[in-house]
Amino acid sequence: MGVHEKSDYRGSGSALGHLRCRIGLIFKTQLSPNPSKKLKKNAPFPPHPPNLRPPPPPPPRTPPNCLPGRRPTLRLRIRRLLLPLLPIQAQDRHHRLRQLRPSSLSSQSKLKIAIIGFGNFGQFLAQTLTSQGHTLLAHSRSDYSSVAKTLNVSFFQDPHDLCEQHPDVVLLSTSILSFADVLRSVPLQSLRRNTLFADVLSVKEFPKNLFLQHLPPHFDVLCTHPMFGPESGKNGWAGLPFVFDKVRVGETPSRIERCEKFLRIFEDEGCRMVEMSCEEHDENAVETQFLTHTVGRMLALLDLKDTPINTKGYEVLRQLKANTCKDSFELYKGLFMYNKNATELLDRLDAAFDSLKKELFENLHDVLRKQLFESPPNGLGNQGKQ
Ligand code: NAP
Image 1 (cartoon, rainbow, N blue to C red):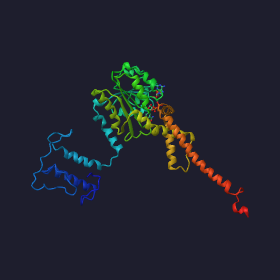
Image 2: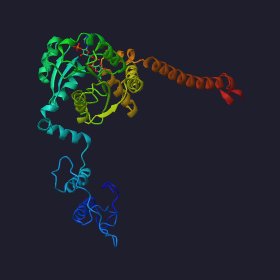
Image 3: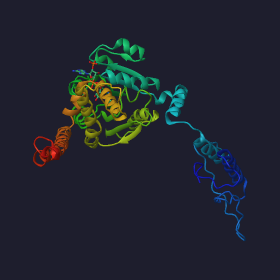
Image 4: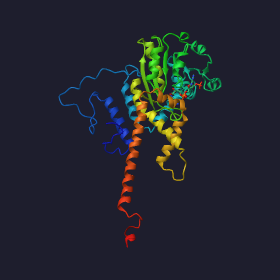
């Protein structure tokens, strides 16, 4: 029985009483001559069955963080009981973990990551990456030297200089529309062989195909989409979806480990990790993302006013408009042009709007027809006849 389930223990009367009872049971079980016997509800200390010798104790198990020869399960079991009672929310817990991080992150788990495309999203990512202790380098079309300095990132105006730093990971965070040109402009010959290339584009099949066409086979490829941005992720990334597809990762342990370390960045922030093919991502994202952005952009064209009688639903619409229009129009164009499912979605949206209008206007016609043919022309009704 888990501690969250309803207690059957008489006399405990509270979570604390229940807990004491449970801890008592564990102590008893540990000291009992028959420790392998499972406890039943309301039968805390069952006697040995008559004429049966207690079974031999199970072979000692030593969890990785316990010394051999001790009874490791006692402490762990008490901790397991206590932890769920603490009213800590996911985000708070991650905040605490982050505070512990500098001492707990060993230098071996750190990566040297080069972000190419240091605009809105690149800078947003860099903040968390540096806070985790990774070494960050950046290059962009525009000069972001001063903002990079404030983020503890080394900025390189020349991509050759950046690549000569031999990053473990090259992370492309350029606009979807400029991705092909930017990828072609990376001086691959200056990088170490088998560098890991990753991207964060909001469409996935397009960068995957370009990576595979352009990069020699000794480079690894990881396509990702953090499905949040500076607005939705401003209070932390806990619970937010992170989609990834290990498109091509070499089989040597170091290459596998490098990819895992990169993914751990997002895992450690509490992201909901979703492994999915790039094609499947685009099929899903056309609704979760392109539709959302399209509705947000349409609402922006309507110029919705703040009124004294705003409803909750109306506020949601205004918020959607605000959130989607914070992203660049170039990003929105990319969502349309480089997701092959986007045209069909627009057609479906058109058809849905037409069918709704048709239903409304047909109703209106029925009412009008009734008025025209069944009511007297002067609108006086029965009175007019008198
Ligand atoms: P964006 O408008 O999509 O991209 C801006 C970035 O692209 C800047 O770094 C910009 O460089 C670069 N860029 C644009 N045109 C370029 C060109 N012709 N040549 C070289 N570089 C060019 O805005 P973003 O929000 O920063 O997004 C970056 C990437 O992250 C996009 O692929 C987007 O799909 C993805 N993403 C964004 C979000 C989000 O919430 N914003 C969330 C998930 C994924 P300069 O600034 O140096 O000009």
